[in-house]
Length: 305
Length: 305
Image (cartoon, rainbow over all chains, first blue to last red; front, side):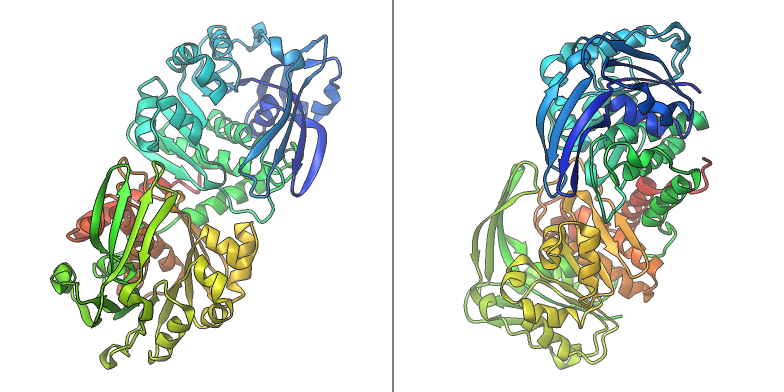
């Protein structure tokens, strides 16, 4: 039940109406493994610069996150700066310094090649494909991508999509990829491109999951205080894939539970800046949040008409 | 289990990317009673002009909708024109001719005064209050309002809010009424104004319901073809209150089912222009759509961690 994530490690500088952080730990591989490691051991492939202190990741190694694939290269770590408006839905990127991430060429350590659950975070589709070719026999491959790659690398993205099981994107990316405004029609077009499961994230409005025979909808947890939405999508993916890896059950019903677990983990993520809230959750806290989702969606299907 | 609705009857001229209708039957009282009449007898208080033919409402009288409170006044019927963009979320009002609706002074017929379930559709809060004072002993009073009244008649709205059980508004109205961007905090402030139940409609993103001890969420049904969102909110209210009136059960659990029934009825409404889709639904169709909501939200709360 080993999980592999290939993605970014970053220093994020974030402003929201509720505060600001500078050079806080971030990046898709970090958020993903912070969430997934509550469920199963995680292996990271990513790159940092010489300015990165691995001690920052002690909370991950304590939870059996394997950092042997974290390459240290000459130069600086990837830095991103952004600002969120009062409604926390619209975000402005203030700067993107790719630094060592610019020439990231993920090398999968030999001892990672038997990984079974793979998350290809948002990197160039060509690199995502190269990673996949190095994995012996994955049980499940999930992919994230973004408008940048849909604009610039569509043929490579199409090729990669044919090789994955699960695609996790947001609603505007889904509309753009399918060139279709209606999400139900867009989902059909995207699933014809390869993935058997499509998850469309809608931020504070929850997430929709399309499977071959059914669809499912998870709400976002209504929170009084949302401090920082950064990383919520990768945290969602971490909870989703972590839960599937732990339960080793790829039935549609279990995918539904995984979607809720992912949503629960994302709801913790946004309660604090950076990965703060994801450092020392208890199983009981996670289970209570999961049950919170149940209470807010459960109704009696036998109620009379 | 008699239901009373006080609201508008209108001729709507609507353009969407999927077609257009001119002078089609509309108005809050019409959409509401079209939906509620599948569950319990409905009484309408509204006003039309001399240009209105009551034959248009034959589909309602067939379902025991009582039109004795539909006043015919000298002049023209209320007319509204609007256009929806491709995403169907943003709507532009092209014209509003209030006509006879401008001086609507709802007179509640004597034989309506024992009504138990009351829906005060979007009219001036002063009029809503006058209506309420004419009802002998309502079991449940639900209210709709809009930004127009929040801007212009806030003191009267506050007074009316103290007298109602359920407030049904959309997310931007909730934020404006509470002067609070976070919906959870906004809900608390609004419930302190009077209503024990607050429903916040979010269009294609579903609806949130806040009760004193809990909250609940209903998704919107993912449809491949949404033709016309006009009237979806009043149709939702009709399903919600109709179901409560039929089941005569005001427990929190039954409110949850009602929220789903309302969402199911709204999902039919938007499938066609005007009230077309609401004219001849079968109980089985409604029940199947209700079960569709169950399948798209149900998961096993006992799944292991």
